[in-house]
Image 1 (cartoon, rainbow, N blue to C red):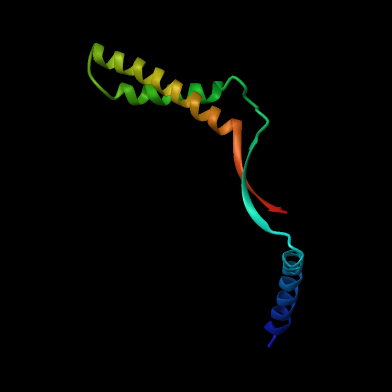
Image 2: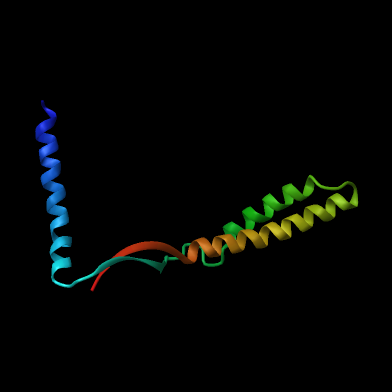
Length: 105
């Protein structure tokens, strides 16, 4: 029995939230969701963090491959490839983000 006031209050609040949308539809206004890409403020413009983390991870993975001089070469190659990958990943994550915006016309 105590749930009745809570249920009634939630129904009233939900109808109040939907009322402007219903009224906008009657006046000829159409609304839709639109995906927008926005830019972020960059904290690390040279992307050093991503490059270093990628190079270390790539070097560790490369060190697991091969033996002798091949192991050294794989370590260096893994570090270079990891550094490039880390740089690109950080650039992509820093530059922009996706959000959804409600547009009414």
